[in-house]
Image (cartoon, rainbow, N blue to C red; front, side):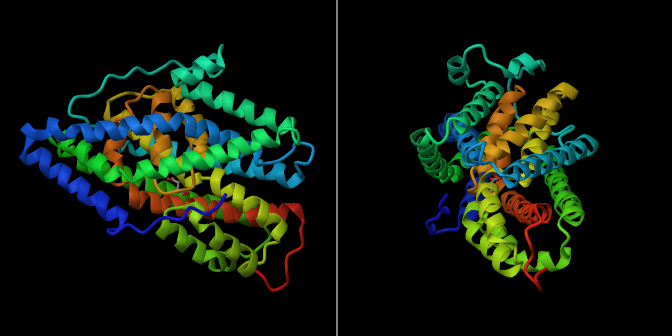
Length: 404
Ligand code: ASP
């Protein structure tokens, strides 16, 4: 995938969001009677997110699987990469779920003026398997759509190389949806204005404390995963010096932090891992481009934390079964998230719907998304680079002398 080139806006995007947020809050507090005239902006924005999320997830998951290549040719490296991506992703979500359950950042927080109606679906393995794939797609049933996407992706892998056209169709479809998603995200400042104006009318001060606790819970999770779990995996499997490797790849982490995009960072990631850290091109050329789009530990942590936070704020107890659904959908939504700014926020809509939570909860998180996106993108990119070292260590490809 080509790195997403962002056109420079006149005002930095995060500032536009902050202005939208402040203006929305002020509008709701000082001109409550006028709120109905602007609230539609938020509703339109949420509707656009809902519109894009299903095709985006479906096409991203299929394209991600197809990129792995033919199963016969799926080298040991391809197989180990899948194990690494899924294993670290699951670890990340697990850490987040434990933290949100312990800290309970959403307990007693009122983020909705009037709580929207919710209905938590029961967990049943049969819920994953649609009787009719087309109906599942048109109903927007997230779990079933993910199931159909995985099946389609694996199916295409098995009819390779005959499915060249089909593969290209998904690849180009993915590009198209990325473009549209990027365009919709540009409307976020207006969306956040409308959403916050509506929320501000009967805003509870507990919301601010709650958001603070949510941010801390997420950051704590990201630190535990990035600074403890991933380094542990690195030490166990790579046979390299962790500190030297970290120093070599630091520019990529800084780029991830400033661009909030794994995709825009990819050239820097490749440069650091190949030239500075000396990982063989054979490994990095395979692991990094795929990893940038499918391996997103930070995003998965965000999805799980945000989803449980909203549930707690609504006073909905999520039992083990529901948390299992969150576990799966958060991991898969991260795989399906595009490697561009705020993509995780868009796919959060899918995780919320999977457990019957209102997508409107995103409105509140939108306001603080950019700084969180910067942090989760760092963990996403760090996970890809740790993956290179680990998979190189496992594959036995010789290290270059004098490299970390
Ligand atoms: N911005 C993230 C990335 O590019 C995706 C996300 O929004 O979580 O890695």
